[in-house]
Amino acid sequence: MRSLTYERLFIGGRWEAPATGQRIAVISPHTEERIGETPEATAGDVDRAVQAARKAFDAGPWPRMTVDERMEKVEKLATVYAAHTDEMADLITAEMGSPRSFSRLGQATGALAQMHLTLATAKEFPWIERRRGLFGDVQIRRAPVGVVGAIVPWNVPQFLIMPKMIPALIAGCAVVVKPAPETPIDALWLAEMLEEVDLPEGVVSVLPGGRDTGEHLVRHPGVDKVSFTGSSATGRHIAAVCGEQLKRVSLELGGKSAAIILDDADIDRTVEHLKTASLMNNGQACVAQTRILVSERRHDDVVDALSAMMSGLQVGDPADDATDIGPLVAQRQQQRVQGYIDAGLTEGARMVLGGTDSPRERGWYVQPTLFTDATNEMRIAREEIFGPVLTVLTYSDERDAIRIANDSDYGLAGSVWTADIAHGLEIAAQIRTGTYGINMYTLDTTMPFGGFKQSGIGREFGAEGLSEYVELQTTISADKMPDLT
Image (tube, rainbow, N blue to C red):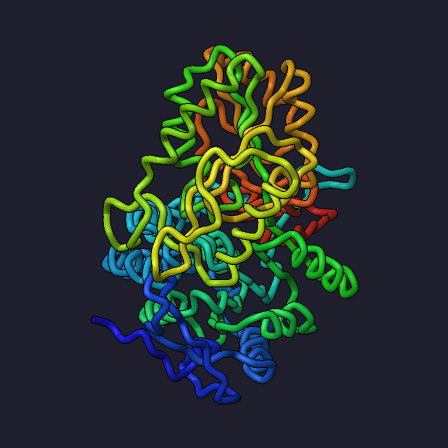
């Protein structure tokens, strides 16, 4: 079995001693026991990493290589990664409690797929474009944005590193990755794989750490662009700091997605799909469909079906292939979700099943919990819970359903469930949200993903995700320019 303890940090492609003796203990959310530890990067480590990245970008070969040469390095990384996807999935399950079935498909295999999909996008990307301008030929060149600070959350750590690091590398950027303190081990194992790719010095650093580490990275004047996935509260702070420096920023933030079930929907099929769409990764997913909107006419049928589905969920050891719901990532998250369940009861919602009692003696578990008789003003309907808690809301007609779905600070995802696909498209066009599903909700990672309102700024995946890591340079010539496309 591979070691789960690291003594050094990956700074500019080299394993370096950390600036201090501060450590991050990684605790299993299933057993509550330590499974490994890593150094905690501090301000001095961030300074070294950014300095190395700055040198690599300003004077090194990486941004001056051809796109094809950089893609060859990413292709090599994908080959190395492919040999370890099952082990990587099991590591993520051990670190943060994601059920093994989700870790393998939605985490490690998804991360590998994202490398290949980004490579395919890059092959068709218009790196150099010719246009006819007012004064003659014009060349539009897509140049790398510079040094990127990539701050990654704990819920799908490998999957969310890739739409930041991979397009940034292909574009010619240098990258400093800061994984969350809950999941530092998988990120440092990725650093070991990067070492095998033989990138130029300084191009990639991996610095596990908490809020102070991220703050120093965001504020560092040597960083040209920050890409962050996490809470809307933290995203607002990062946007303010980047705004002060006119630093480029992209933010993929929270969600409180509404699943609108129309009267003509097949309820059994809908609820079967909502098992994943609403409760994936123990409910710890920004796109989870956690507000279930149903008409007064179909309310009881939908609640009965949801209750039957949720009461049949297997809660337990995330390493067991039969497990549907594992533990939450940390005790504070367990307590936070239990606090929302208490709030739902206090504000007058009716709890159909679940509650605040832990279903197991050990581990940071929360019972799958279903509320109804709720209003959209309640905290359980307005705030991102990030746990296995669903809230059923009743609408009077379709206009009311659209109003409730849009009555949110968030706009990340959503879905409509109907027998009439054309009508589903009409509903989708009226919802203020970045991605939308009709009779499903699954990300298409070849297409742009991101949010409206407080769900973020910018997009990940597809050509739009690659565009986040380039600047446009317009070159005008009085004479006819050679064709470099």
